[in-house]
Length: 150
Image (tube, rainbow, N blue to C red; front, side, top):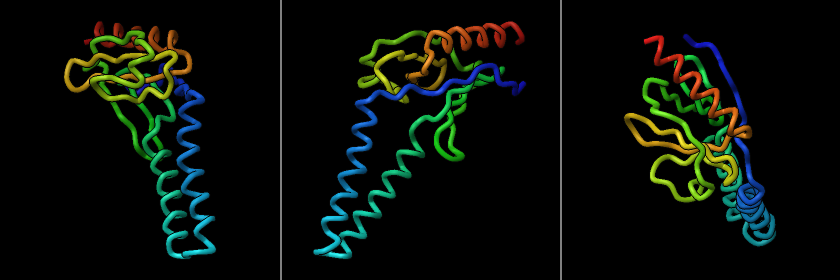
């Protein structure tokens, strides 16, 4: 059963955008400054900027999808995390501090609207959907449906 039930985008806080943009801007500016002094070092800094941009794109969540049988966290490119609904105990609202400190996998990109996914096996995780209340409601509905269909 691979029907899409609900899809949301992760919420990105301004502080995260500033940090990520600051890292890219710093290495880019260093590359420009070094361009007149050391061409090889400048090329290395431009390479670091490109690598960091691709890395951020690859590992930061792009979409959060709930299917009839799984929760899918779509990362950049072909990368995604798939968690079967049979492996999820429940989903609940989490405190904003869990976006920073959490014993598990942190895909939370905002301290607002943090959702904790508690699993039966494997590490629990936190995410930050834009519409956290709707996301939790839809995921719990999908969990109930999956539980009754088995």
